[in-house]
Length: 101
Length: 162
Image (cartoon, rainbow over all chains, first blue to last red; front, side):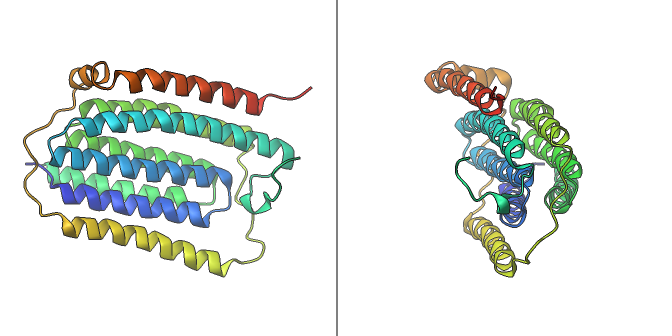
């Protein structure tokens, strides 16, 4: 039997809240990027669930595009972190208070 | 059967997501998030999105989190710095905003007048491929430009200056 759509939406909401809490509370740049990934995945899950609810395959195509954009975002974000670590010897976001060196 | 699998996978996913956000060791964070992403892949399979379930494992668990692990190792697994000054306001505000996000999700669920899903939908590689090379061809091609730009940007950012 099929699992109802609301179950998936609740799971997505819980995962999104955990990711949002991580982004807001953690101080390490890597953890913040991980939280963003978790939020993106929660949104993807909700999108696929609603797509099935409406019998639309377009939602899955959008999720595919979101995955590709997330891959690009992670590559640039991690490159930024590596560059920041080289300059500051730290990825504590509280210590990032200059825009240029 | 499907319901039991869903509850098992959801419990595992939520617990490992909490570990991914709350643990202080960044290697544990990344590896816990791998477990969460696997459980989301199983959810995709339960929703009939077969191609996305495979892509989720290949792209997220396989590529993106290996990249994360690479950077964590490259930076010498920097542990979370000890909280210098305590930040009671940020802590309260962060938890309140996260609770707000969860409440928004709950409100959406309450508003769903759950009709049964409209027919069985199977997101096979063939079905998605037809859409990607037909209706969404421009976006599909443009993704390659975006990935190239991200590749060049990442290389420029980490390049050592002489």
